[in-house]
Length: 251
Image 1 (cartoon, rainbow, N blue to C red):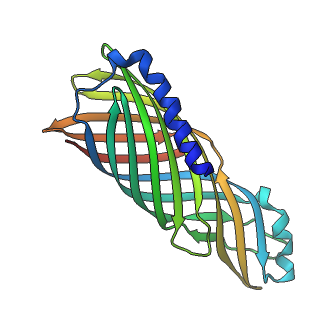
Image 2 (image 1 turned 60 degrees about the horizontal axis):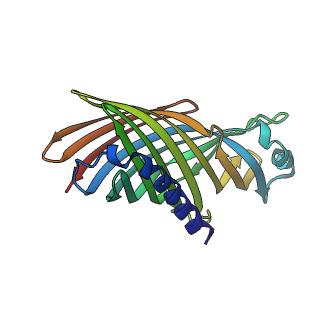
């Protein structure tokens, strides 16, 4: 129920922006769109908690060293999105995607013990819904996007998790295409289960992580290829590093 309320609230907030600029909204494109996208992302993580089960006594101190462990993730996502314009300047969308990659936690050395990194498989599926409000003033654009995502890992030992993001952005229309710059705020917490193999034996590891940097800059470029077919590319910087590419068909 909480998830539904967040999604509805996000759409309502976007819809409240639309009436002020309805006459200047972008509605020249076809009403419905479908897109295929590929995205890579690297980011640092904050390790909130760490527990070890069936661990040798010499490793017990690791559970109290979560703040000293550096964690990061490297993922690749392919997804299909369906979007629909429901009012002037307001689009809603839903997508389904497949995630592959891993989360790595670098374990500090203990006295007389050199420990390997913890590597956790993060393959899974993502399901997203969201809305976007877009306004236009001469050759300039402004938009606000809200996305709510459900992540379901392939590893059944790991629980599904929810995240959301809000992205305001501005852009300019040129003869070469549309250039935009946005600032994304994202909250994303996940629980993972893995194994730590050491010279002393094997330990089951449970960790709770979240994105270390809540904001990142997103620069994007969009151009029409012809016949209602569009190409969009993006770069994410600032705490997170990523590249995305999408082919969009409007009809």
